[in-house]
Length: 362
Image: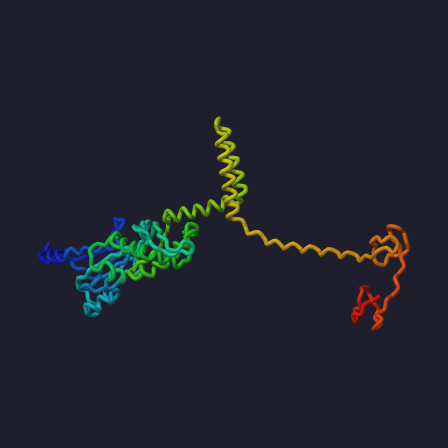
């Protein structure tokens, strides 16, 4: 081998003709290709696998982005880098550039949780504190924005580096998302799916500013303060009990059964029955609907007026006015002769004086 061939081989050993990255990790977001002091050969082969992107950076400035596939590096498919380096058409010399591989696959089952209670306003309970936890998955949506906002020019960038930021956004935005969803605290457990989707859409507005996107967001549990949970249990118990009269009967039956199992349980039976009946009456009175107003009783009818009476002309017994015979002696009653006032001639209707002029009669 001649001297020229040796020099040629040495030059080739300083050039890179194949660029690729085989990801053997599970948490790498960005990998900077190690040039090891070498230059890239014009016409080199660039292999970008599925769920990867390759970005060329020239002196800290973003240049060309390559999608999955096999690419031959020429001035035709590197227009931005060609413009930055002011290459003339047909440039065929080696060049230097940083190459970053972006992992665009979905990183799943990342856990999140509220380290401290989150305040929220509820229509039923007012201001309450809740704790929640769940999982989420994310991926890189905009590699250029992600590189500018997050990793910069780091050689290696892992999921853990960005996971903390996403968790902070989740916790800070959770209470706002729950409030905007207008789902009452009593109904949260029955609406985990709806609330999860609502939170994902609300949080993506903030996450996508980093070049990322939440693919999935799951709320696995929302826990309320102990006193609020007790109030919910009491409300549930009241709904289960239903009729308080039936509840009192149930308490009495329970007391009788316990007394039957206890040889000296007659006193206990009385106490149990009394407690059950008393509790039933108390609840019945507390929850009874107000009775309908009773219509006032009708006023008693006025007593009938007593019939007018006069005296029998024969025996003097009291008889009804207008009777033709006396019911006591049977004497026929003769109508008295009409009496007229001697002064004014007015017919007298009885009495000792004239009702018209006051003259004494007879």
